Image 1: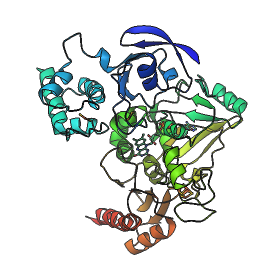
Image 2 (image 1 turned 180 degrees about the vertical axis):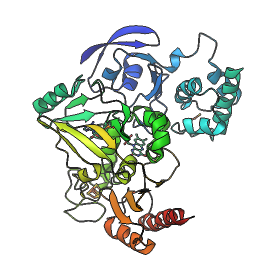
Image 3 (image 1 turned 30 degrees about the vertical axis):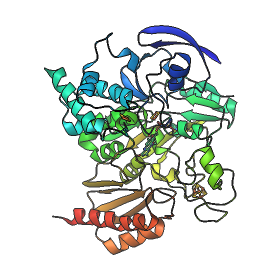
Image 4 (image 1 turned 60 degrees about the vertical axis):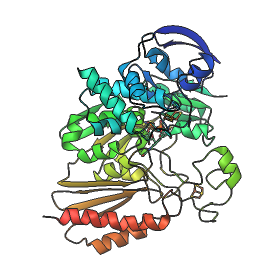
Length: 155
Length: 308
Ligand SMILES: Cc1cc2nc3c(=O)[nH]c(=O)nc-3n(C[C@H](O)[C@H](O)[C@H](O)COP(=O)(O)OP(=O)(O)OC[C@H]3O[C@@H](n4cnc5c(N)ncnc54)[C@H](O)[C@@H]3O)c2cc1C
Ligand code: SF4
Ligand code: FES
Ligand code: FES
């Protein structure tokens, strides 16, 4: 085990981890941040997406030791208190979630994408979320929600 | 036990490689290698992460030659204006790999050295225990052919097809020397040892010397995103009408057919491709369909090339 210092959602803390451990397991099992979901655990579903220094990465493929000295942001750090981020708000409003298992990954993919591409077209939004699998919604309502969020972010 | 190391120079990475002598793995983006570790297909104890090494992440153009650091993420390649303007074939190929989020982590070097794939091998340990292990793992027969000598797992690198069609060269460094050679020469027609790199070699740079007069690229896969290739074809034609057509995903190594348009016919092209590709039933798409799609894609390219 190695003792490392991680900064997650603005809080810096020391934690003991295995050297091969992924940040997904560290977040869920050691820091009790279970908002980030573990679904396929092999890079194919997008549900474990988190931000590392503002960039989306798959938690299930990222070694925890690679996260030392970086700012990690998870779904728990997105809303400010009771007030949801616009992407979250529109996912709720447009019924862009059912079981909600894919939702944290969708939010963590859509936010940096819209920040980088505020004028993204519907097709570009679709493409940006093409690594986020959802077995419930049929995708249309997720795309609607992200499009609506983009519109409100621009106004 | 497993150990993670993050050297900040090539020299340190090579000295670790010497110290761990065969019991290590280089880790670039890790988007390929992590899955092999999880599926217990890669069991070396030491991970040498190349991420902190300076100078391996760069895109530059000098005297019309494009140079890419091996650790450059595919997403940076897609977004580079120089690559969009002068090497759109490379941009298309990079864009067809995996998903937008994975491409932010996945590197060009890792993509060129992505491990060969087979439906009977790239599975969980439980799956493999159930169906039976194969030659490439701990078994003694190939689950596809029943043979006990050859492995036909497929090279699936999309950017390798594009860069071979672009006549790219690569720079490799090992403990005592630096070598530059054509990318196409590193691949071997074997599903188990699919490239000739000594395991300590670090791929540092990729050089793309030429801008073709025309290019064409197409990838066959189940979904428009996420899936590995079932067939990738990249083709270029230079100012002297020399065509370079590279097929990947259908054999153990990328297959290059190089011939002048003056002599090439569509019939001979298809014949050469079908003869050289050792395509077996080890992909999600059925074998007959994949073989037929070789003809379909080549005919499409031919039509595009001869369309005035
Ligand atoms: C869901 C999913 C979909 C995917 N789809 C595709 C696809 O469509 N097409 C495709 O080609 N791949 C695909 N991949 C595989 C992988 O993401 C890509 O091939 C990626 O480009 C690999 O790059 P990497 O930097 O992550 O490599 P790594 O996983 O870090 O490395 C790959 C191999 O190369 C070696 N290596 C890497 N860099 C160097 C270097 N500089 N010197 C020496 N050795 C090195 C490593 O030791 C390892 O054996 C997919 C993966 C996932 C999870
Ligand atoms: S082609 Fe045969 S030996 Fe090779 S990985 Fe597939 S089943 Fe195994
Ligand atoms: S759990 Fe990481 S991509 Fe599915
Ligand atoms: S809402 Fe259930 S998986 Fe997307």
